[in-house]
View 1 (cartoon, one colour):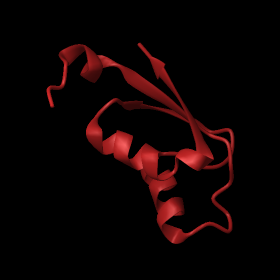
View 2: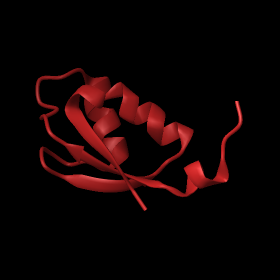
View 3: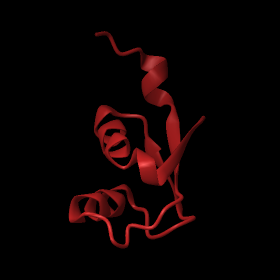
View 4: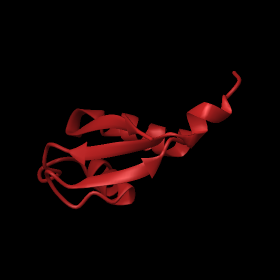
Length: 68
């Protein structure tokens, strides 16, 4: 699989839409690792495989948009 340079320059805007309260510890730690502090908090992260994997793990609790 080839990774294009244009894909790596994009950033992702991640918005937490559901609370981590009552969820498994791994989900709460992943949200904290992304820099999210609670519902409606937003963070811009690099579009890298590591961040995409973390986002995939908590995709049911966040929304993701690509920003330039």
